[in-house]
Image (cartoon, rainbow, N blue to C red; front, side, top):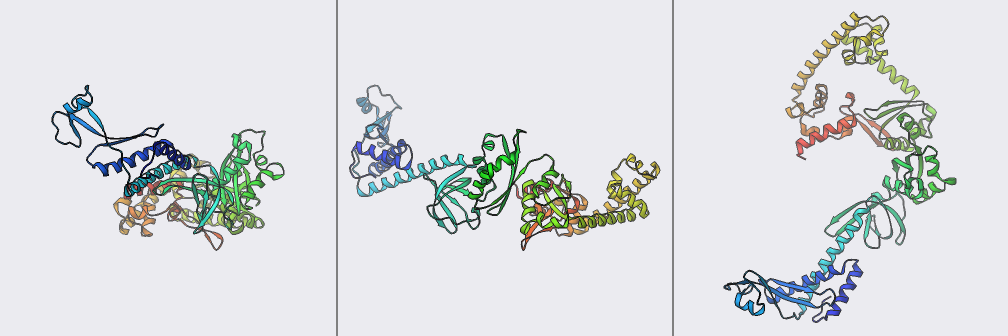
Amino acid sequence: MLNNRIDSTELIRIAEAVAAEKSIDKDLVLTSMETAIEKAARTRYGTENDIYVSIDRQSGIIELGRKLKVVEKVLESHSEIGIDEAKEKNPEIKLGDEIKEELPPIDFGRIAAQTAKQVISVQIRDAERDRQFNEFKDKVGEILSGIVKRSEFGNIIVDLQKSEAVIRREELIPRENLKNGDRIKAYCYDVRRENKGPQIFLSRAHPQFLAKLFQQEVPEIYEGTISIKSVARDPGSRAKICVQSKDSSIDPVGACVGMRGSRVQTIVNELQGEKIDIINWSEDVASLVVSALAPAEVMKVVLDQENRRAEVVIDENNLSKAIGRRGQNVRLASKLLDYEIDILTDKEESEKRQSEFKENSSKLIQALEIDTTMAQLLVSEGFNTIRDINNANVDDFLKIDGFDEETAKELQDRAKEFLEEEEKEIASKVQELGIEEDLANHKGLTLGMLLTLGEENIKTLKDFAELSTDEIIGGYDEIKGKREKFDGILEEFSISRKDAEDLIMRARKKVFNF
């Protein structure tokens, strides 16, 4: 870039050419050249000198010199000049002022020229990286278009003209065959500043890629008349998208499908044949569950909104449709609504209800020392646990045929006594298990929870902090293509996902100090 001798006009031409090639400001290139010349000058004239270099932005003329401080008595000749000598150069100069002294032009030798080239290259490369980062950091959340440049260890490098981006193997649509030179679209989900330059990460498997494609193809979504509420994808296979219209006269599903399916088909083609279920949003969660599980016909939905769980009853003939191939349909519906969905046949539901009824009745008989008829009557009226009876109002009992105030008070006294004894027993067991104080004092954990944790050998706050949310409340695994439920350690206590996450995060904050 710098030869031994270079005229001023050539310097400007070089700067302009480099600026155009790298898409950076010419001034940045000239600043880099100034830095390079300054470094060479310090080597030539001594590093102790306060060297300055200025390149005229129009003519390209290089001004090279050093700065000297005006003093009464010179102690350091490289940085100071006497007042008398300074006045010869500038009669108006005063003590403490700075004066510039011109230095002879540098004749770049081979080593000096090479050093200058390196300095310029580094600074231009840094400027180019800053330009790329600033250009793409605001494009996170957008669809970018580029050309497949090459493949590296299963990852795809995409040429975006002014930069390169990467699509990691896990962010590709399965079985998608991309070749060098193919033009593709992808969703930009992250841009990071790294030493080797900005890293731009794209995805074709991200749920928002589907949402953005609908935004491009459906004018009503782009304009905001129709909004996308949620998306769930099994990339390359099936997807579900929930849409809502702000205008009652516009059918959101029909608008997304388009005339003869033209709009949705364009998206399906882009996603390599991925089937898309479009669902009309409803404030009624039960209705949403029914729609999300289509094409299966649902008989009944029982919601636990606090814990975001839904129990769905389906007849035997619709079971396979509801679950879907390898559990795909129910898994996507669960992701779409952010609800844990349990699928039961009508027979299984009946058996479950009968089992729960017997179990709850038996517990009341043992704890309250009442007969079977009374226990079954209480359970049928919604008093499923001892705590339900203890916490109820007397008026709640008076609604039951044959119950009077005296009976209600007696039941509650027995319930209270039982719970107090149970609490003492649990507290003793917790102590025997060796539950440490930090866990015992963790806000939100009851004695019953502490007992269960201790029995699972979770005895310190650190042990608890290392648990996942699903380990606490339960969740689902995919085993041999089937969706299998696993129990959570504290599932019996009906802790909501939000509360479980809060318990864990507060524990981690205390233990790991973040």
